[in-house]
Every structure is written in C-alpha cells, then in structure tokens.
Image (cartoon, rainbow, N blue to C red; front, side):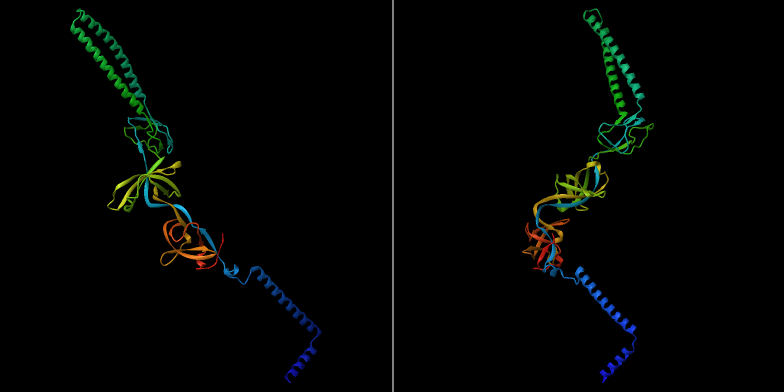
Length: 388
C-alpha cells in the first residue's frame, strides 16, 4: 500500500509541474554530472604529475637506500702541538744621532722600506767642515815646517861629524824636527776625528727594514742620543711560545711550525724552530720554544698575536677516512663498509684526527669502499646504492 501511495503522490506532483520547471531540473542534473566528471579528471591529472601518494625510498628503488660513499685512502699525517705567542722583530733599533746639531733634512717617508746604508737624516755640517779645513791647513803648515827642520837637522848633523859644529846645535835641530813630526801626527789624528764627526752628520740605516714614525723635524736641534725614528727588520720575524713539558723529548731545532694570525686566519705562515729551552718552567710546567717565521710580502708585524702549530712528527701513509663516516657506539666507533651492495658494520680504532679526516688504526684497509654519509638510515645488511 505504501508503494502505491508514493507512486500516486509522485505522479500527481509531476502532473501538476509546469513544463519549464521540468526542463530546468533536467539541465541542473546534467550540469552536476559534468562538474563531477571534471573534478575526477583533475584529480587523476594531479596524481599522475605529483606521484601521490608518496612511495618509500626502499620501494622506489627496489629497497635500495641511497648513500654517499668514499674510499679508504692513505696519506701522510702530521702529529702537532698547539701553542700561542707574540711576534717579535729579529732586529729592532731606535735611530739616534752621535753628534749634537741641527737636523737639516729627512730622507725617508714614514713606514717605507729602506736598504742598509740608505741615508735617513742629514745634520747641519757647516761648522764641522770649517774645522776640518782649518786643521788641514795646519797640517800643510806643519809639513812645510817639518821639511825645513829636516834640512836644518841634516846640515847640523853633517857639520857636527866634520867637527865644524857643536853637539848642542845638532841636538837642538833634532829635537825641533821630532817635535814637528809629532805635531803632524796629532793634526792627522784630529783630522780623522773631524772626518768621523762629519760622517756622523749623515745618519744611515744600519740594516734593511721598515722605518717607522719620525720624532723630529728639519731645523730642530738634537743632542747625542735623541730618539729620531725606529727601524725594524721585517723580512723574518721570531716567535716564542710554550708547549706542555711532556713534549720535551719531541720538540727539536729545525722542526717546522705553522703560524696563523687573526688578520690572516686561513693562511699558514711557515717557520722553523731555532731554540728549545733545556729548562721546564716551574710555575706553568711548560717548555719554551722559539722559531723564525718567514714574512712574505711583509704581512706580519712585530707585536702581533699568533697561534702556532708545531709539527713534532710525520706519520707516513696511514689509512684515513672522512670524519663524517664515523658512527659512534657505546664502546667507540664503527664504520659501514660496502660489499656486494650490502652495508656491513665494522668496529674501528681511530688515531690522529685532523679537520675533516681521521686516521684508522684498525678495522678497515686502504681501498675499501665505505659509507661517508647517509648511514643514519642504514642497518646491518641493508642494500645500499651510491649517489656518486
């Protein structure tokens, strides 16, 4: 009965609907179907281009875990000791005058490089030249007097031998000759002293280096010992640093050092040890070491701070691996090697460590392939494939 009533109700409702309403309902139904079909086609396109849903790494490549690999290689390793110190000049002097006088000229530019013997300062030398000329004239006069005294002495000596002259006259002529000879020697010494004084008015560089700030100006009076300007040898510098006393038997003269400074943190300056103290400092239990450091292009300056790396030994041809290949364990470290495409873990014993590399003393051999990175997703026996 219910079905019959429903049928009649629907039929009656349809019978009383207007033709326009029936056409609108049909159009609405067809539009809904078209929209649904368009949505389905859009979803299929998205799936085909994005690869959704995601597939696991193992399933995407037949259960192969991508890793980055490397070879165990051999290389020379440096055993080093760290230290810090201050750079010092091998030679450093303060230029000072050796005579009193007035500064006439300055012949350098502050901070410039000078050679040994280069003229730095000139002092007024007019009065000294006058003294020199006066003494040279006195020397010429004394020589003329000496020649005359020599003639007189020779004549009186001859008369005395001929019994024509007295002994007293001869002795008097001889004494005058000897006095004039001594006078000439004295004047010569005075002239040499004046020449040295004259040379001291030309102040020259005692060695090659960098001339610093000048403390006087032309026209200024200076006394003996007045500070004029500093001169520093900078082709090579020296540095003193300390190392722990346990390295007493390992630090030796001639060993190489590498120096880095705050101004050049990525550059090594090479030097050589020239002194190792035979004594241990009681207060710090450390050992004093000194080294010469080459200074190419004069990039280092005395007084600068330096971090020193002393090479005490070189280990030749030791197996090394990238540091990131190490996997920490409870007892130490392990490394994943690769054999027949499988990851096989091995416990290793490490040695020296340098930035980026580590020595392997036991566990792997040179030439073996290891997992460098990506081992965080690897377990023992997993199939792996190299990304390289």
